[in-house]
Length: 172
Length: 101
Image (cartoon, rainbow over all chains, first blue to last red; front, side, top):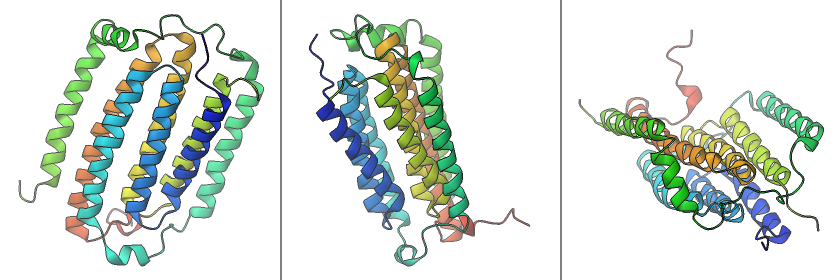
């Protein structure tokens, strides 16, 4: 099996994802942040394609980049404040918060460095059956083994629809 | 260059997770806080799909469930933001201090 995950594509996608993720949390204008987040989501879809997960990649593009981000942009248009862009964008405890988050990152780096041998070094012994009928197999899993979580997810979506309508309504 | 392993994906996912955490903890704009939460969920998804490469399709099914939950969370969260903006005329989280003594 010829590997799709060439280092060149991996590093380009990784750089695109991380740079645009940093742009999400540093941009002043929320519309620019939303557009950067779309770039991050599309790079993650590229990662999923490289990991032989075409169905998840399609769901990522259609649902995240197409659905959720349009919702975000609508709400940004609804609540956009001219003076908010001119205000200070970070709260008072941002130094402490950044140090704490970077400490968490250091902990993760330490764990990954220490436990490096736990993971197989390459994809040689990868799971068989991921290449051809990925979507079909996911469908079989969803309607077979994961039937109850699937129904719970549909109920969750129903509750979320009702909740969003009730909260966004002017007068109940 | 060397072969791309699971660890490479884990490192990218960890970086996205940390960036999302910093965004949640430091930004004032509540819309951008929700976007950072989406970043965190996406980092988790990348981990799940990277491990599904090694141990079967369960990770991809879980990633689909996480995407579903992210959609529900975004809908409810943005509804809360609209209700909140209608009452307070602001989108800054540190100006919502009614419960703060």
